Length: 82
Image (cartoon, rainbow, N blue to C red; front, side):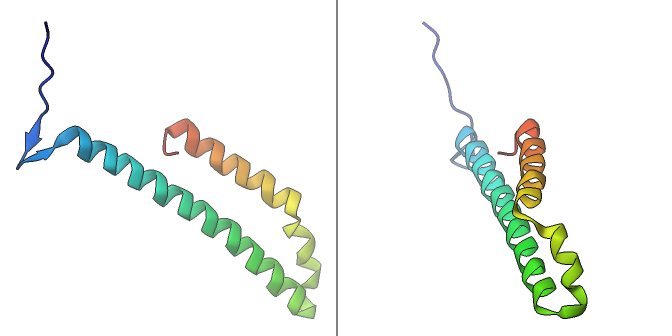
C-alpha cells in the first residue's frame, strides 16, 4: 500500500501553499477584470458628461463592452488564471 507523504517546508504544507497561491491569482485576475469593466463605465459617464466628448459615447455600448470582456475572460481561462 502506497503512503502519501506531504512535503513540508518550515512546517508549512507545500501543496496547501500552492493551492492558496492559485486562489490568490484567481482573485487578483477577477478583480482586475472587474476594475476594467468599471473603468469603461466611468469613461462612458465622462463622455456623456462633457459635451465635446459626447461623440465618443457610442464606443462604450454595453454589448461592445461585454464582448470585449468575454474575450479578456476567455484568454485568462485558457491560461488557467481563472
